[in-house]
Image (cartoon, one colour):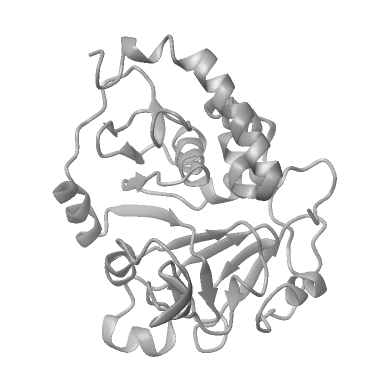
Amino acid sequence: MPLVPELNIDEVMISTMARQLTGEVLVSSVTAFGSLAAHLAKRLYAPDLAVLSTPESGMDVTPMPTLTLGQFLTDVQQGIPLTMEDIFDAIFTDHFRIWINPSQIDQHGNTNITCIGDWYKPKVALVGSRGIPEDTSHLSETFYYILSHSPRAIVPKVDFRSGAGNGESRASLGTHGAPTVLVTDLGVFDFRGPGGTMSVRSLHPGVTIDEMQERSGFPIYVAEGEIPPTDPPTAKDIRLIAEADPLEVRKLELMSGPTAAEKFVNIYERERQTLHATYPRFGRWGR
């Protein structure tokens, strides 16, 4: 990682993501990074947030990423139940926030989680647009993160437009849903460049402008003047992240191949030993 040695990219990204969240809104936790960012934000930066772990467990429970017990294990407090209708009501009234992890994002902030390659003969079929069309037409803030900043992910034009960005897309949609922030393993970006294009807000400590441009699929706008470094995580940020994810499920999002497989097996075994005996006493089966 192009960071100063004392920093871990997962802690840098999660703490940065947490600091973007504000207000009295419902924050959905879809991935380990998104879950931990929401949890950290509510604990330290935005106490009025309502954090949704999963629709089944409800909101305002403490999420802990797991592998064997579904998407998340939640703490023993009784969550506030929500239906999918409640969630879409929150989206349509701009009381919803989510950190989206697209496969591609382009210079105008259009995003793709549908397919890589031609729609009629894709190289890779992905999960589909899901709720991104609603998010990118109704929310006043839309948040994205990409774990590996590369020309394969930061592209001139997405292969399929799952979520609308700026430019031509905005003409008929209006300002709600426009891209707000992108956090990657190199820095923090917004879409305030010429014509609503991607621009640099900060670079993580140790990352250079040249390195950032080299690992992008198009020239990213850099405003005149010095680009500030991203604020590093505090000691309290790091402690709360570790407490909320003691098995380090978040690390899997940064890995692939044999390394990821080995980490998965280790987490699975630790989960089985530490959680199997306690989980039946609470949660949906034990209350």
